[in-house]
Amino acid sequence: MADIVPFPGALRRPADPEPLWRELLGEQLRRRRHDLGKTLVQTAERAGVSPQYLSEVERGRKEPSSEMIAAIAGALDSSLLDLTSAVAAELRSTNVPASAAVSASRGAFALAA
Image 1 (tube, rainbow, N blue to C red):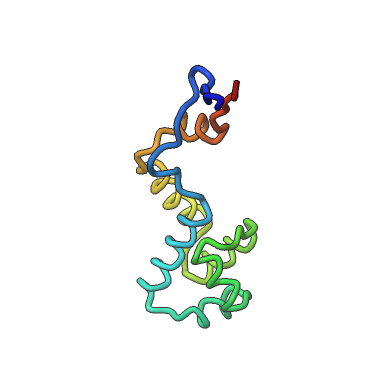
Image 2: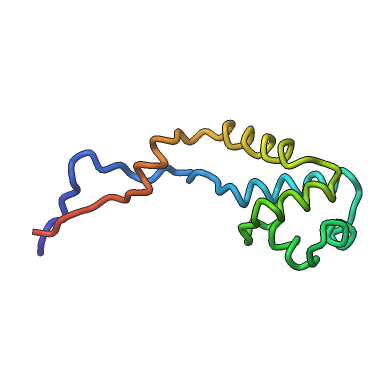
């Protein structure tokens, strides 16, 4: 049976992968909507999107365009700048260094002899 030998310098994946932008965006949108006491339907109507679409955005399932993000932010009496700044601040507060996430995303390779 062959042994698997990892390439030198191959990094293991971090225990907690770096969060995805769309997931943090969705959490921020839902938090703001709840803080305002608005329902999903009310916010979706005001933003000009379907409640199903807004739900998927809030759950981090959809990758909305900047126009959609701006429309939803406006429906929540916020601006695109305020919203994206809040999401960026959450990203900065994560404990996963960017270099580790980039290295891990390349994957580890191994040769079988």
